[in-house]
Length: 563
Image 1 (cartoon, rainbow, N blue to C red):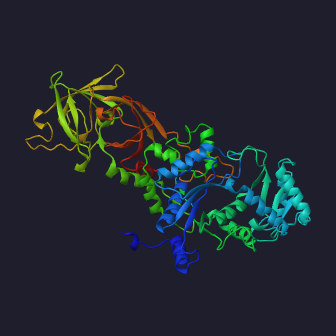
Image 2 (image 1 turned 60 degrees about the horizontal axis):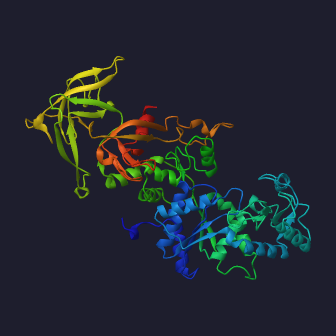
C-alpha cells in the first residue's frame, strides 16, 4: 500500500489541518524529550518513530531534547546511550538540546510570574503540601503562604537560587486554583531546591524546575509546533497551556504557542515498560545490564539481534491510538522474523551435539558440497565439507520413536541437508546408559540430493562435520516474564514473582559450521531449523558467541494452548 493510500492517524489529521490553516506558517517541528536517567526501551522506540516520522513526513524536523532537570538521577552515560539508540533506529535530529540550556530563561520567567502574582514561595513540607492539596473527593485548601507579598516572594526565590536554604525548606508554586477538579492545577510546584552536581552545569544551580513547568517553556522557546506526549500527560495539558498563556505581553515566547497532543503509550505483554523497574532489574542482578538481551531496552533488543527495520515495522503495525491497549509481544517477534527471513543468510549449527559416525565412509575421505546461503540466489553459495565424523542435534534422535517420527531412530533413514541419505545401524551408549554415538551408513548414490531409485525419505536434518566444526557458546534467550502483564499482581504482590527462571539457557558445547568462526558482533544468521541468531559482542575470532534472537516459530502459542 502506498503512503498516499494509507488512512491518516489522528495526529496526522491534526497536523494536516494546521498546515491547511497556516497555523504555524506551514512549519512542523516535533521533539523527543527523554530524561537521561536510564536507557530507552521499546516504548520509547515507538515515540521516536512517531515524532521523527512526523517531522520527516511533513518536511520539518525533530529536536532531541534531554529533560535534565533532576541532577540526582541523570548521567552523561545515558545521554550517550540515547543518542546512539536514536541513530540506530535510523533517525537524525534537527538539534540536540537540553533543558539545562534554558535554566536562566526559565528562572527569569519564574520571576516574571512572581511579579504578576502568579507564583509564590511556599514553606510547607512535602507531606503538608500533599495534605493541603486534598484529593478527587476533597477540595484543596490554600497554603498559609499563598498571599505573600510579591517583594517577599522575589526575595525568598532569589535566596533559594543563591543556596541559602536546605532542600525541602521552600518551593515555588504556581497560584492557580486549589478548588480545581484537576489535581494538576492545585497550585503545582514550579521549582524545588536540589544541592546536587549537575552533569552539565556542575554546581552553578541549586534550584531546578519541575517537568510540568520546564516542558512547555522549552517547547515555546524552540518553536515546537506539535508537542506530542503519551496519554498520562492528558490531564497535565491545562497546566501546559497555563504556563505559556501567562506571557500575555509576549516578552518570552513567540506566537503561535505550541500545543500538546497525547497518544496512547505502548504497553507490551510479558514485559515491564518502566525505566524505574528496568533499573531495579539491573541493580538487583536479575539481568546482566541494561543491554541484556532479555531486556525491553533498545540496546537489549539490538544485542539480541533485532534490526532497526523490524522495530520500525513493529511501531507501524501497533499504530497510533488515543486510548491505551496491551499489544502482543508476538507482534514484535513476528516483525523480526519477517525481516530476518528476507535478510539473514542460512547456516548450520548443532546446539546439543550427538556424534554420528558414517561407518562405510573411509577415514580421511571428504566431500565438498555447495550449499545456498539463502533461498534468494543473490546471496550466493558456500562450501561445506561432508566427512565420516559428524554431529547432529541430540533432539533429532529417539531410540523408541513416537508415531509420525520422521527424524533418526534405529533402522530409520533420513536426509542430511545438502549431503546425502543415512541410515542408523547401531546405537552406542556409555556406562550410564546415555546415547553417545550413532553408527550409520550412507548411500553414496544420494550424495548432493535424493536417492536415484526414487525412494521417499521424509526427514531432513541439519548437521556439521566434527572435523571442521567450530566450538561456540550459544545463549538461548526467552521472555523475561511468564505473566502476560507482570505488573498486574494482587494487592501487596511482588511484580518480580513472574520472572521466568528459564529466560536464559547457556549452551557451551555447540558446534557450528566453520564459516561462522569469525562472525562479527551484530552479524545475523538463520540457523537451519533452529531460529535466528546474532553474534554477541563477547565473540572473539575462532570463539564465537551467539544469541538467539527469536525461534522460527512462536513456541509460546503451543505452550499457552496446552495450558
